[in-house]
Image 1: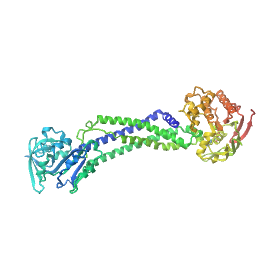
Image 2: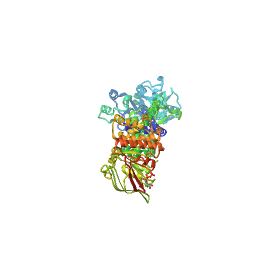
Image 3: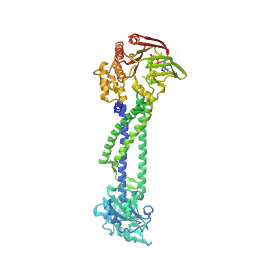
Image 4: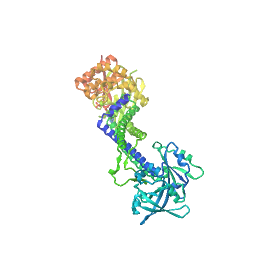
Length: 410
Length: 229
Ligand SMILES: Nc1ncnc2c1ncn2[C@@H]1O[C@H](COP(=O)(O)OP(=O)(O)OP(=O)(O)O)[C@@H](O)[C@H]1O
Ligand SMILES: [Mg+2]
C-alpha cells in the first residue's frame, strides 16, 4: 500500500511528462480501439449485404457448385427450405437458380446471368430488391416479368415495360428462348453485376432450362443474433445423405469477400503493431529518464535498507500506474469515438463519390462501428503489459545503483 | 567487544589506470554509546570510511565487523536488512524523499520494516516533537529549511533505533548556529538514549561537540583523542 502511494506520487512529480505519456498511451488506445471497432462494424455491414445478395450466411449447393459454377449441378430442394426455416436461428431460406444465357433486344444482344428467384422471399432479404418499388417487382414465380441491371438495360437500349428475348441452354442440350418484359431496374453498384443481371421468377426459369423445381443455391439467412455462430452443423444434419448436397459457410461460399476482409484486417493489425511499437519506445524513454534523474534518491533508498527487488517493484508499479491512467483515458476516448461511430457512422461519401465495392460486394457508404468489449479490454491490458515490459530495463538499472557512488551524484 | 571494528581496512578506488588509495590500513574500533567524529581535510577518506561502515561499499582488503558480524560474509539482501535494522544514515544534504511529507520521511525506515501505520506514528510523532518539528509533519521537504530537513533525517535515523547512526558531514550545508543546534540535539539523543553516533566533519566548531575525534589524513589514521564527559 505504501509502495503504491509512493509510486503514485512519484508519477506526478513531472506532471507534464506524465501527462504527455498518458496522452500518448491514451491516443494510441483511442486509435486502435476505434479503428478496430469501425473495421469489424464495416466488415459486418459488408458481410450482411454480401451474404444477403449472395450465398446467405450458409449456402446449400450440389457438389462444388459454389466454386465451379457448373450449371448442371442443380438439385431439387424438396422439403429443405421448410425444414431449415424451422431452425430457431434461421430467418429465411431463399432459393436461386443461375443460368448463363443471352439477352436480345430488337437492336442489341448481351451475355447475361439469368437468375431465377422467389420474388417475395428475395425482396425480404436482398438489399438491392428492397429499393425497388412494389409495382416494379416481379409478380409471382411463373410470370414473364424481369428485373434487369441498369447498365445492361442501357446497353440493350431498352426501357422499363419493353420486351427482351432470353436464350439459355436447355438441360437436353438444345437452346431455349423466351420473351420477358422489363418490370423493374436493379442497381447494385458492382459493374459486372449491373452489366449482366436479369432476374425472373424461379419456376419460369426452371421450366425454360428444363429443370423445373430445381435450384443451384439455397441461401440460408440467419437472425442477427446468430450471425456470429452460424448453425452449420444443424443445417448439415438436415441435408439428405443420398445426393451430393452440402452446406457451406459464407466464407467458403464467397472466398473473395472473406479474403478481402482478412487482408484488410491484416493491414490494420500491422498498423496497430507499429503504433504499439512507437508507444513502447516512448515509454521506455520516459521510464528510463525518470530513473536516471533519481539516481541519488534511489541511492539513499538503498542505503536506508530498501532491497533491490523492492526498488524494482517500485519502478514497475510506477509504470503500471502510468499504464492504468493511460488505459483509462484511452478506453474513455475509444469508447466515446466508437459511440459516435455507432450513433452517427462515418459517411464515406465525404471522401469518395463512387459507389463502394469491396470483395465483389457493394456496401453502405455510411460505415458504422460495432462494440467489441472483450477486444477493447484486451488492448487496454496489453498496453498495461507493455508498460510493465518497458519498465524492466529501467527497473534493473535502478536496482543496480551503488549507493556509495550514487551519493556523489548531485 | 567493540560495536564497530575495522582491521587493516584498505580502500583503493580505480578510475581508469589510476589507483587512488582512499584508506590505507585503517584500524579503528567504536564502542556502543560513543559520540565520535571523523575529522580530516577534504579527500582524507572520511566519506569512504563511513560508506564502508554503513555497508554501502566494500573494502578492497581488511576486515570489517559490526556487532560481531563479518560484513564480507553477508549477501546483498542480508546487507539490505542489516542496514534497515542496525544502521541509521544521515547524509550531507538532500536526504529526504521529495514526494513524502516530513512525517512520512521520518517513518520511512519503519515502513520498510513493515511496521503498521499507527505504530509508526506513535513512534515518530514524539520524536518529531522533540526535534522541534511539531506542526511541520505534513510539509514536504521543499517547504522545510535546510536545518529542518536535517532534523527530519535525524528523526528518520533515530526512529528505527539502530545500533549506530552514521552521519556524513550532517552540518556542512547549515549555517553555524543551525549546525550547532543540530549537533547539540544529536549529543542529547546520544546521552539520553545511549545511541551511538559516528559522524564526519572538518569544521572545528562541530568537532568541539564530539566525545572522541578520530583524525584522518590521506587515508591514514593520524590521531585519536577522547574527551572526558
Ligand atoms: N568513486 C571514486 N573514484 C575515484 N576516486 C574516489 C572516488 N571516491 C572518492 N575518491 C577519492 O578517494 C579519496 C577519499 O575521498 P573521500 O570522499 O572519502 O574523502 P572525504 O574525506 O570524504 O572528503 P570531503 O571532505 O571532500 O568529503 C579522495 O582522494 C577522492 O578523490
Ligand atoms: Mg566526504
